[in-house]
Length: 113
View 1 (cartoon, rainbow, N blue to C red):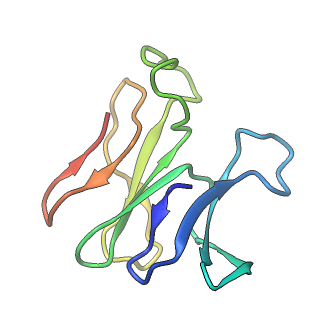
View 2: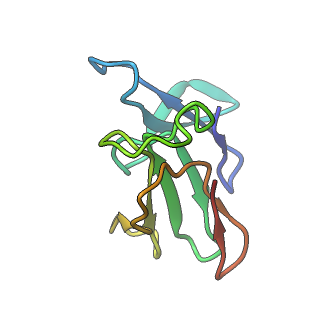
């Protein structure tokens, strides 16, 4: 489980139908209809945090940040942002580091580890 949507749906990450278990996509499911999950249209991701104006920030390759703390290779965690919620995803920041666990706290601040 990753979190909740504003309308109370559960968000979860799953590698179902993927050839490798480390490639996950995000889905939502209503508590009153768990048989109908919906895929969030953001590409591969493990985490998501919604902003106050409808945007979102996602984490890709962000599993187990403690074990990957000093990792700098091609599978390092990256954060992507969609400011308006229209599917226009762009890298949030380029750091030579492994980024994980984004949290959107207010209109202007996104925290991550």
